[in-house]
Length: 232
Image (cartoon, rainbow, N blue to C red; front, top):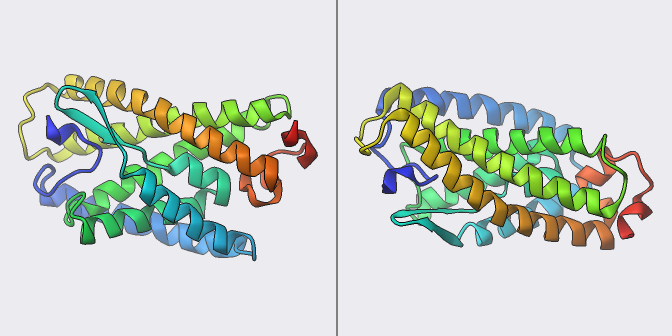
């Protein structure tokens, strides 16, 4: 059952697949660096540092969802809404690297796998839903809150299925379940975790948008409404 946690440990996925996804992670991060540099300004630089620190802190919170199964917040949607998808993915990656190298949370050889799932897939899935919903929902504060909640659940669930794909390609440890059983366990567990993450994301983004809407990437770039709408 520990193999069903989001952070993949060394030896869960064989080295061939781990190396493949290390390449995927490097390619994705290269794109994020190029695109992220184009968006950097005086607001995003300090905000990105705060976002990375906040994600590191909340990832220390573990949820016991089922007997023997636990997980933690990912922060992809939070990062995407505050600093954009490209810098958001970089922020999550920095947290994952520090956790793997210093705290042994997630295997070093599995770093590419974890970055692909949590930093790239999770952030991208959350951002795509945010970008869609903020353009169709009424331009009010409650819409931003609802968007943050929904996108967080989708983000975490999609990230968990990245592990299922990787395990199908090269699972090296028998977890005692069929592939369908693994997919169902991961989706169910992380959908529940996503609710917790969504509440934290909604509260955090909602507060920042109310106090300093100019610091919220989603408000500046995805919402065409006057910023004052989020104070209501």
